[in-house]
Image (cartoon, rainbow, N blue to C red):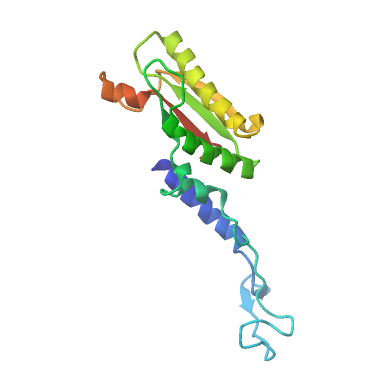
Length: 186
C-alpha cells in the first residue's frame, strides 16, 4: 500500500509538470490574465490565427513509467517470487511474471531494479544470507537471459533478517522464502 501512495504522488507530480501550460500573460502583480480568444477561432476550438492551446504530454501508446507497474491486472504488479525449501530455482509459474518484468526493463532502459533475496528462519544466519543471495542471483540470471541489461539489475540478500510474516511454521516460512523485485524510486 505504501508503494501505491508513492506511485500516486509520482503520477500527480508528473501530471502537474506536463500540464503546467499557461493560457495567459503575467501582469505586474504576478497574477495570470486570460487572453480573449480570437474571432478567427474555428468551431473545433482550433486557433486559425495562431492563438490556441498547444498540448504537451504523452503520445498515444506512452504512459507514465509507474502506471504500468501499479496496475493490479498487470503481471508487473506481481513483484514477489516464492521459492521451495532450501532451493534457489525459480518456479515455472513465475517465469511469465519474470518475462513481463524483463520486457518492461528492456523497453525502459533507464529503469533499475534491486532483487532482494530472503530466506526463512531455519538454518544459520550465514547460510541464509548465502541462500538469499543465490535466489536473487538466479532471478538476475533469468532476467539477463531474457535480454535485460545487467547494469539495470542489482542484488542484495537479507537472509532471514526481514521476514514478510512472523511465525514458526510452514505457512510463515513459505512466505519468507522469496525474492522481491524493487524498482528504483518506489
